[in-house]
Image 1 (cartoon, helix red, strand yellow):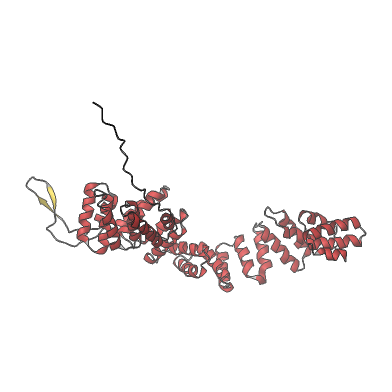
Image 2 (cartoon, rainbow, N blue to C red):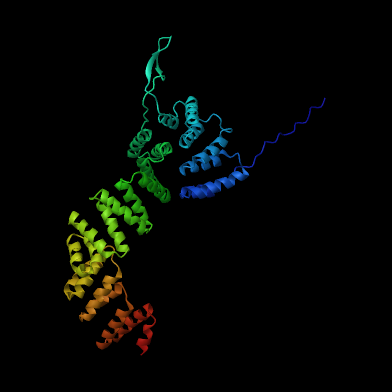
Length: 425
């Protein structure tokens, strides 16, 4: 008897889930609404992709669209019926829609599936409880008796989660801290400290838009937080949105009058807005708070042009060695007629680690104007300048040094071909 031929069994094949790289990128950038729309487009072609639907539901929870979030989480349940996490999140959403009866049932079911589920346990602690009495049942065990009524008091659950998150932040466990803070905000969307802490974590991750969103929500919920106003203003100022940064900086200083960081940033914002008188006020406050701060003197030199010489001298005396400070002080001395002082400070500028060619050019011009012709070539050799080389060429010609004059003309023309007309003339 011939044995039956074995036919290879083909594996059941299903198209892989569509990639959600675009949606994830939008989410990372803090563009929540656009990310949700992108995931929903993917769900149109693959309605059973739980991952996409969970992303949509989580986004809706962030936007506090609780009923819409419930719909999305419920569609995930048939595929993951024993997920304590799903039940807990649906329960939290029901809390915010006012459907507390369903919320308690779902949260209790989540705890039956996973007795250690943190979100379910925390959310259940928000349940108002009666003043319990003790009741002895026939087996002799003391149990809680809910028949005795009394005043109800909630539990500061979000505050507890926030404190746990702070401990993790202090230990640099940012991922664990963020999870706790998100749960605190799901339970209490108006918990300002958690929102502001989430803003700080997102900023440390480099997700600026997310940080902005959390800071903005946090400041609305905790308007007396000076650090919240300051951090929000920093991000606005970094984006050059000075009009939005300024009121938050003013509020931060009002709440914490000794916040010099806020004063610094407010002075810069005022300067950028060309509100020079206001910038001067804050810089003077900073100088009173820290009289030995050289950078305050540099900032004053930028806005107080009438006293620029005095401010720059003070900055250098306090130890400032920045090239731009030294060079500008040389210009101020030269304008005041102190050519010797200008030369001395320009020499320091030329030797600074971040030196640029302006100092060498200034020294060359000073040497030529003072008929110290031997010094100019050294500076111009290191940092050539067409106009100054042209002047040096004329000096050499006047001295009968034709070869040196020709070399100077050649360098000048290479830098600026227009000087060839002067040469041939």
